[in-house]
Image (tube, rainbow, N blue to C red):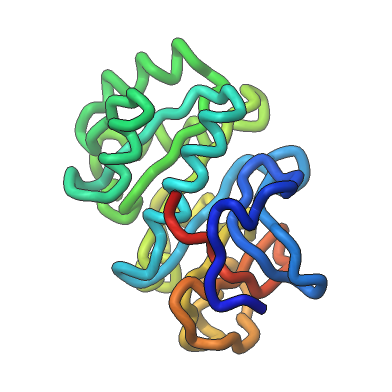
Length: 213
C-alpha cells in the first residue's frame, strides 16, 4: 500500500468518483452510484481529510457533467475555494428557500455537504432529509462529511439516515468502534495521514486517499 497518492495515480479508475488506491489488489478505487447507491458519508476527525474527499468528489462529479449543489454547515471550509474554482455558489445551513429552489430546478443534482453535523435542527436539514429519501427516484446523489464523534454517537438527524446505507469513507479510524455509525467493527489499519476505510454496502477495503488536486 502506498503512503502517498496523487490524483494522477487514479487515472483509469472506472468509478464515477475516484478516491484512492487500495483493496486486495492495491488499485484505484472509488464510489459509483450505479453500484454503491446514492447516499454516502465521509467520516473523520477534524483536519483528517474529510474536505479533501469532498473536493475530489466535487471535481469528479462536475467533470462528469453532474449538477453539483454544495451545502455548508459553516462558512469557513476548504470547500469554499473548490466551489469558487467551479463557479458554484455554496448554500448556507439556514438558506432553506434557496436550497428548495435549486433542487426543484435540478432534481437529479449531486448534493455535497460539509460539516453535516452542524445542520441538525437548522432550516436546510428537513429539505436534505427529504431529498436523500427520494434520491433514487430522481437519480440524485447525497455526499455528506461528518465528524467521527457525531457519526458514532448521534441518534437522530439526516446523517443517521444516510449511515444506514453503510456506504462511504472513514478516515483515520483509531478503534473498531469508529465504524459503529455504519453498523460495522472496523479492521485495524496503519495510522498514516490519508489512510482510510472505503465502505461499500458494508464491505470494507483499506485505501490511501488521493492528495488534494
